Image (cartoon, rainbow, N blue to C red; front, side, top):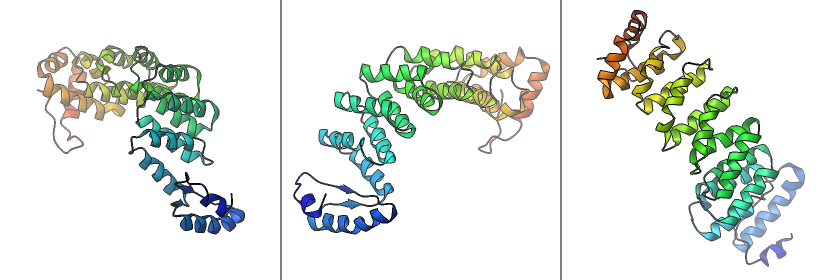
Length: 287
């Protein structure tokens, strides 16, 4: 498109030109000069383009949604990914948005597919939520992990049971993603029993640490015996200590009873770890 043709387009409001290589550099000056002459903003770096896309998300208008949908077809995949992310944050049921995100999820590069499936998870549309549920089952690698994480935002009644099932996934990254998603949900307390049971099965240390941290945030006193049973695992001491601290503050009688019913070795281990200062520099009290 020539400069004269560009100025003849009254609908043109923004120029994104991110040149690379000699040929593009040769055109860059002419494009920028034409944009300035026409009074049109011109962005010349990917970072600036991404910032502009994020800013569009604050407009909250149908016009901005249309602009963002158009940017899903941008030449640069990082601009497309940013546009998908911003559209997801709008939590819209707009069918044009859902259709465009589904298209990018099915037909784009991994970074854009990841951003698109996360965005679909935030859309209340049944079509979008079903797509996320299916992706968590059928996709692989980073795309599947993104779909599992997106289940955190689904209102679909199938989401929490599916996440509970993924807690026992053979892939520790999938199990970790499921724990993170459960922790984001308002109905997370319904999964306390399954999270607690996870502590009794062979699991990756990262998964166990994340599970204990989630149980702490949920103040899950029913998990006390299972958490204390791991007291001899040095890799979990910080998480167990934090959990015991929470129990001592919120459920002191339950903690006292659990310690009383534990083995002498477990009691000594807990007492030793609680005698050490926590990350915030304070000492913890178990009773």
